[in-house]
Length: 569
Image 1 (cartoon, one colour):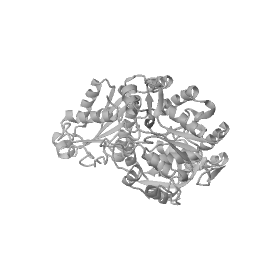
Image 2 (image 1 turned 45 degrees about the vertical axis):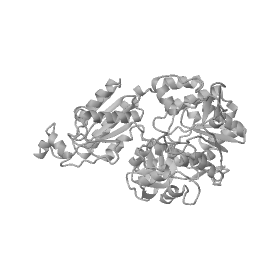
Image 3 (image 1 turned 45 degrees about the horizontal axis):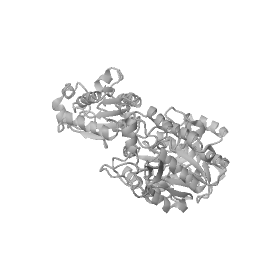
Image 4 (image 1 turned 90 degrees about the vertical axis):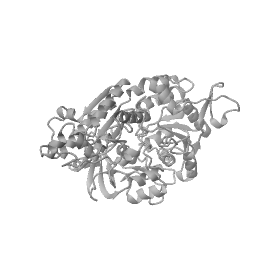
């Protein structure tokens, strides 16, 4: 391990971790890596690797082993009792052997690091969910992702050869050491960091300016540009908004805009502690914890996952140990008669106040192409959002039907296609039989060929969704691991797996294509449900039994789910 020499003024007392090997050593390791097994990192793992490599997660020097992982879940502390509230792990499907070396690469095959595996251990998703999120409610934004992670975590020495190649806004992508250097050059002892995963509106502007003035310091505007909450405005659009605000409405010599490749967990109070610790590593002396910090939205019963001020209370409780001062603010509201913003508790008696919720911003303005009012958002920001934000009509997604032959997948899919078209959506229907004639012509029915077929369809559907279309896929897709691999092609929340759970006996009776009859006579060997196993989804987004639910009702269930996810008006 190589460490940066700059000392941190923090309770950790160590140095800013740097896992990036020198260039000469890196060139030697590249030759070794060419002969090693490859582990392709997920988007989340890429973010975590970059934060580890540059010291943003100091004092961590790698993905957590079992002792640290279990200690963090139970106590928010590493095994050595140092406060670190978030588990940073590398889940995999394969139980690699201790001592094995792996080349860690991105989706394009670019080599990023070599890991020497020291430890392999199993973990329990339900225990993770309850410890980190305080719930196993399926409505949590990370529920499906967590349930799709591999059953093993691996840990070991990391030798980082390169950081992920992120070309957008390169001058703003500052490492902790680079951020600290630029803050020092601005000349103020105090620095207040502001965490954001959304565009900044007038209320945020007022809040951040108040904070900087309060401590007579520099504002570090520090947005997370890794993975955030599904449905958030994309980071390209957000950074464009930040830039135009910095250029026109903040004092340049008092503000630093720097991007942080953090993959958020939407873990509320725990995440607030984590964010504060990270900002200490980036050089901040103060950190703003706002209302509902890193909130996950609403549970299945309609209640919030976290009390709006719970994160503030927890962060203040650990303030001294975090090594950073916590600044808290209440909800900011606008006084139209006075043309100014105040905290909710500062509203004068009898004064009229107003606000626009995040849901209203998304659904009442951006989703329908309305400009946000100038009292709420600077005109420059409102214009960027109006031009870049996709109205609901253009939000891409995939509905993936899986189930036995004859279960009713194609029938529901065709009905859903018509229902979406009636609402003005552009729909691509990828039905199993049609796909076999074109996209997957020549493939057989071995497990390998079936997996290839499903992955091909999943990739095509992901491109349809990425470009704003609605993809409907109706395939038996018998193997759960392959379906979960397809899920990872999509942005969170934009893949809806529908398990058409119609019983086998009903499917045999229907037998619309005569396949069960042929299979029973030995004319179709390896037929799913008879000679070959079908693996039902363990955690589908929706389950529909067409033996018990009418087709029209099935379609309504799916449309309601799309509306719930703000993918349909």
